Length: 151
Image: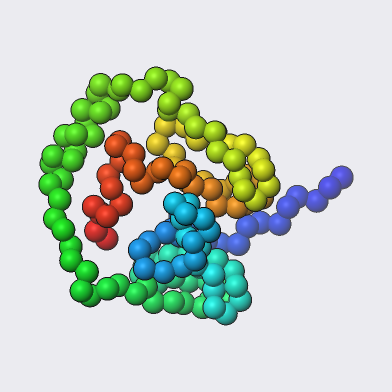
């Protein structure tokens, strides 16, 4: 009879649960419009955003990197109420067919085909763990623009 798998290590509260690998001001582009990766300067593993420290952190070697924010960049205020009303109208009167709500995406790492349904815009390949992101995710009318959200 086989042994049960060992228990998972306890979750460290400082470790992020969700990976955030795309922001303005750094990283390496994998391909145009497909996001960025942030390799660790210590070991080469992918850095992940730690919301508590507001830094990129390596889960393998513990390396941390400050996020460079341009102090001269102007913040443009947007009307949140108009944006929410527009999103509500799009949801109440969908003009898309059922087929438009599902998109097949091919993993560039292993060639697997994945199905993204509704508002899913990024995921991890269940076969090879490569990050996968829709090319037109940030231009969709049904989403709040990324530059419209402040931390």
